[in-house]
Image (cartoon, rainbow, N blue to C red; front, side):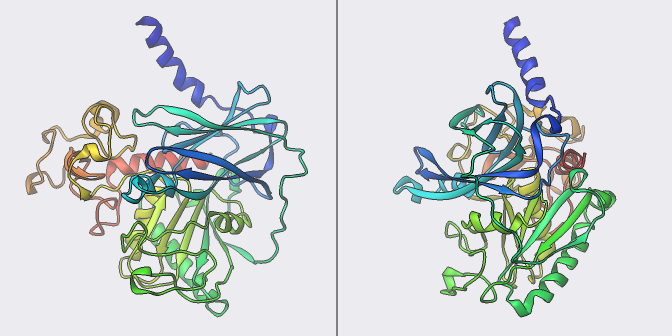
Length: 423
């Protein structure tokens, strides 16, 4: 038992010990593209391509992920394959799809992509999956030879770019690139104005309001052939640059795209940490996938609230705090371990979540009554499940559009992530 305790103490230090950027990396990005294919029972990874991109937008200090978020993880090791030099957690649309009814009956493939600083020397990349017990397993391994002439080196000169906000170097700022979707050539001035409006929305909300010097906003002026986006349920189809669509998994408001290759190609025009796709429509909806992409519509009455909500998903891995479609928690969660998202709990290990922030006057679980509506507790109904999954407060931007603010539990993680990327 003593040996086990020592091992558990050592592992977090190993995973979070940082390395010197200049010892291992050049100031540009290596992009690794692959296809993930399978169904509800099994999946496989198939290599597609490696690309060199001209900028590295991430921190040069915080190279090893300390958060342990995401359904998947990239682990980059030095030439010996033993020293960890870069890691990041992430999620994808495929992980959401395998929980659908369709995935029980057919197999499909999704194009995916991960990025990392460009290694100076041979490096070993491992792609890992999280299992239901929250343990990561390596499912794919690839040796990167940075001198290989098969690494794609495309030009990035077709579209103009602009830094709309921020003065700091990309290495010490959170860099957000906003990509236009469904804006024609003549509508690009509208895109620029829309982004400026959303930047104002962004800085109304804590912790960005008081940390506006830590953020850069960029745009890439890439027009679409047609205005708008696909709405399959209404038989509306548009020729747009990023191929977005509503009705993802037959949910009308869920706005996504599977065209990850084009997204990455456009984002590479500037240094970036987060990709936000702004869709030129007034229809309600959006989407956000951790360390992958954000989507929001430009002209809906709730676009301001949705903009922040989706950023909570993609930037800080926050879970949705509403119940939707599931009654039994065991349909989605292994109830013997905590969900990995910081803002939901099954109370199996509440100490590891937000117990330190709870109001002493609030019982756990906490009744959904007026008496406790301003307290931090554990309110039943979250993570798409009605029973046995709990959220921190009665309401939060991760639950509804009634508030633009993150609750204290969500805020703590968003602030920690902002500090991580801006160091």
